[in-house]
Image (cartoon, rainbow, N blue to C red; front, side, top):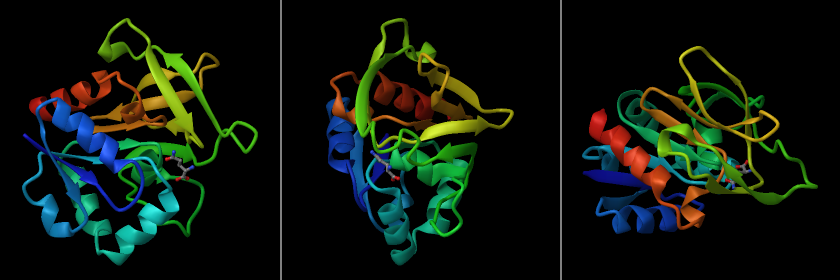
Amino acid sequence: MKIGVLALQGAFVEHIARLRSLGVDAVEVRLPEQLGDLDGLIIPGGESTTIGRLAVEFGLVEPLRQFAQQKPVWGTCAGMIFLAKDIGIDRQPILGVMDIVVNRNAFGRQIDSFETDLHIGPIGDIPFHAVFIRAPLVMEVAEGVDILAQLEDGRIVAVREGHLLATAFHPELTDDDRLHRYFIQMIEKA
Ligand code: GLN
C-alpha cells in the first residue's frame, strides 16, 4: 500500500513518519504525476489559504479533485477546509469534494488552540486525545455524511463521507495512531 501526503505546506512530515511507523510506504506529494500510483492521500493541517494557493500554482487542483472523487482522502484541519464544498469564502481555492459546510476559524482568536478527549466510535471506546490548533468546525453535513466525533456541546469535529475522511484536529501530533490505522483500513476496504 502506498499513501501520499500533500507536502505543499504544513504538518506533512509528522503524517509521513506516522504512516511509516505503521509499515506503510508513504511519500511526499508536490506534483500531479505523483498521484498516479497512490492508494490514498492525506492533506495535512497548516494554512489552507497557502495550501490552496500553492495547489493552484503547481497545477494540482483538478488532479487532486479527480483523485478525491475516486480514492480515499483524509484531510486534517486545513486539509478538512480544503476538502469542503462550502467554507463561506469564494476567493480561496478549495477542492469542494465533501458535502460539508466548514467554518475556517470557528474558535476565534481567544481560543487559539486547545486539547480535549473525544469519543470516536469507529476506533473504539478509549477516548482520543485531540489537539486543536486554530481549528475549523463542521457547521452542516449533507445526507450521506457520517458524524464521527463531536465536542461535548455537540459541535462536529470529525466526519466521513464514503471514502473521504475529515478531522478538525491534528492526530499526527499525538502518539495515538488509531486514526491513521482507521484510514489505512478505509483504503484496504476501498
Ligand atoms: N485555520 C487554519 C486555516 O484556515 C487551519 C489551521 C490548522 O490547520 N491547524 O487553514
